[in-house]
Structure formats: C-alpha cells, structure tokens
Length: 445
Image 1 (cartoon, rainbow, N blue to C red):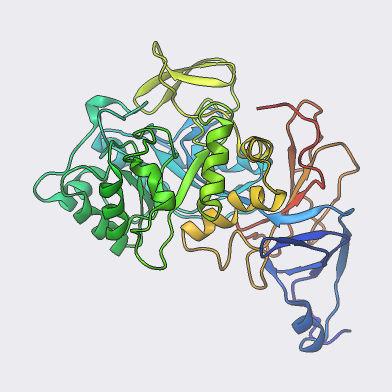
Image 2 (image 1 turned 45 degrees about the vertical axis):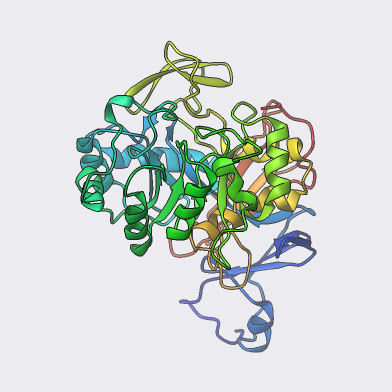
C-alpha cells in the first residue's frame, strides 16, 4: 500500500497528454486532481509520496476552467423574474442544462420587477455549489429597477424606480433582504446613487453601471464610490462620442482609483454587438472583458412568444424582441456560442477567449483563488468540448461518469461534462477540455 493510501482517501486523477490554460498561456503539463481540488504534483510526490490512482489521456486537447455567466435571465422555459411557487426547481433545471454549454457557475439575473416579485423570488435562490447535478449559483444579479427610463431597453417602464430621500432604505424596501445578491445594476446618474453604491459595496455586493445616460464624469464618480462593472457594454447606454465617451470611456479613463480596474460585460452573440465594436473594446481593455450571455427564458426553445419578467418577447431566428417592437430583449445564444463568436470576431487568442468567460468573471467577483483558474488548490471538475467527433474521452471517479453526449455536426461546439468529484461532490469552478482548434467548422452564431 502506498504511503497515505486508505479507505478514506479520495483517488488521485492524473490527466495526461494535454495543454493546461494557466497564467494566460497553454502549458504542456499534466493536471492532477483529488477530491474536487487541483493538486501540486511536487507536494503529492515528495510530501505524501503518492502517485495517481487513475490516468486519463486527453489526446492533446486543452484543459481550461469552466465558464462563469454573471448575466443570465433564465432559459429552457424558466424565467427567473417570474414569482412561481417553486423557483428553485426552475433554477435547478437551468443549472443542469447550461452544463452542456460549458457553464459551471452562474448568477441568475432578475430584470426590473415589482417589489413583491423580488420579495418572493430572492429568498428562493441561495448560493449553491455545483456538481454533476448542475452549475453552481454564485448569487443573484439584480438588473434594475433603479435604471434610466430613456435607456430602459426591455425593462418595463411601469416598474422603474428612483432613489428617494433615504436611498438605501428604498433599495431594501424594493428588494427585501440582500443575503443572496451578488451584483446590482443601476444607473449612476440617478440622485443619491453614490450613497447606494457605497452601501452595497460595503456589503460585498458588486455594483454594475448600466441602462444609463450617464456621462463619463458621472461614471468615473460611480467607480470612485465603488462600482466595478459595466452591464453589457455599448447596449442601453449613451453611444461613444469623442467629446464625452460616456460609460464606454471608463475602459481607458485615467480618473479611476489607483489599482482599481473596471470590468465590463459583452454580449458576443452576433446580434447585440457588431464585431468591430467587440474588437475596439477588447483592444482597448482586454483584461476587463467579461463575456455574458444575457440569455432569456427562450434560450433553447426556438421561435415564438415567450416571457421576460413582466414583458412578452418574440423570438425570430437568432433575435429576441419585446413583442410588437424592435427593442432587443436579451439573447438566445448559450455561452459556448458566445465564446466561439468572440474568438472569430476579434481574432484574439484561444487563451484570451477562454479567460474572458472564466478567469475575468471570477476576478470580478473576487473568486479567482478558487474559480476561473487551474492554479494549485483551485476547485476542479472536467469539461469537454469538441469541434469534431473523436472518441469521447471518459473521465470518472469512483466508477461514475456523468452526462455522456453525442457531437452534432450543426453545433458550433458541444460540451461533455465529466465529474472528477469524490464523495458525491464536485466544486463549481470546473475545468474545460477544449478542442485544439476552436476556429474549426461549425454553425455561425
């Protein structure tokens, strides 16, 4: 028996013949995992005197962190902004289905709603760990109702709110307890918004600027008060102007607090943002770019009428509109399609595209020590993406293999989930097994 081996010890898995995305580079190294954590092989060898219990040949593919979606309104018929009697089952369904698109952690997002919806829904969506049952919930993203009427987009005007004399009290009265909240999107030009930003950030809640007519000075002041994110850059904000670039100007502003960068969400679905705009943003501030889906309940359902909170939306092909209007109302593209389109549109490296959907959102939320990274000690799981149809690389722990699937030629790229968990648990900051050629043939989003 090897040193330390026993019935209680979780098995050590060694992934060989792979390239690991670590530190912004692809390294030809093996990856070692035990009990849902990435191991330092030197400590394993020299301190514990152990070797691998199982080996998996990855066929030269890339190992990368699982995706993190910080803005997703629902999907597969589930609307997070609907106050149903069993909100949790809907969240669980979405969590399970988005695994097949590479997402291992997410922030369920609520659009502008009446207070009674927030009071009923928020307590029913707690933070959860991910696993073979589905992606982990990192906390809620509340987009509205404290946003601009002029730039409300698909948010219902009747439920928009402004801050009154006791601004933060208004927030609590609207949302109820904030225990499960991770991100709040608001318009920084609203009166008393800076008081609210300071109160939210003091509670560990990320404040995002969006659905706004703020000029650059107001946006800079909001960042100085604690805001760190921009909701779907270019969409629902003043367009860039050379005399006052508005919120977009934060990407290159020299008035941000020392040592504090700005992160910004991008919807790379082929509809919301022109490829030239994607390239401009990425080249101006690549370290802050966070890919988001902004997916709506119609994700995965096809053409027809669907809901988005208090609104009815109509899906036509690859585009969703508020019913009876030409107003875009979120996306129907899953995260893997967004990563693929972003890679093709910007011409960036595979490493940059993958980090925009994994490391950067983890950094935004302060989770980069355990998610969005393959560093030693980080959470671990296994994702598999193929651009063609080679034999499936099976990976299991304790004799279990999860979510086998078949590649479909029409898919842009397909995900196969493999758990490398032990004791019925997998941590949500998962790995990704990604094709060597993400630029290969596939359906164009």
